[in-house]
Amino acid sequence: MSEQLQTAGKCKHTKFLPLNEPPLRRGVVDRTCFHVTPSYYLGWYIPRDEIFDYYPEAGGEMPAFWTKEVMIPWVKDYDSKYKSNERHCYFRPELAYVTGTKEPHLLVFISSNRTQEFIDMSRNEQFIKDAARIAHIKDFFGEVRWIRR
Ligand SMILES: [Zn+2]
Image (cartoon, rainbow, N blue to C red):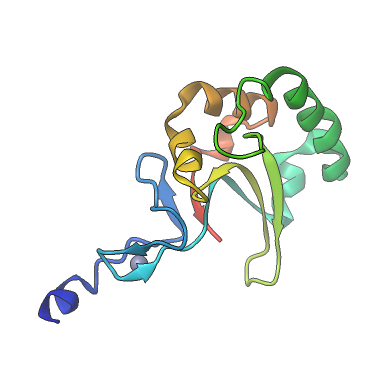
């Protein structure tokens, strides 16, 4: 019990974690703080009001832009390269609109902490580079990082 008290303040489940400090798999109890590990996405965080500034080339039509300029080129050139070995899925840059929070935002994400294989993609530098390029990530977006949902 005293050990639990001593470690109680060491929760690392902050909103953002750096690329090289991945969370555990979601749903797993983290023994350092005794929390169930929440969902994290690996990617970039864009405040909803700033989507146009981040993606002026989308002209305010983000979903259509994404399909045409990101998804289709990715599927054509990279799906075969970044296919999951464990599941019927592919690692791709994707969009998630997060609403119902105080700070609605858009996530451009390329992986998550869904399984260990997904977490391990955060160490695949070529994947991150390819995904960032195809997803039109610019320097000012900042480093890719883990973002809590
Ligand atoms: Zn915690």
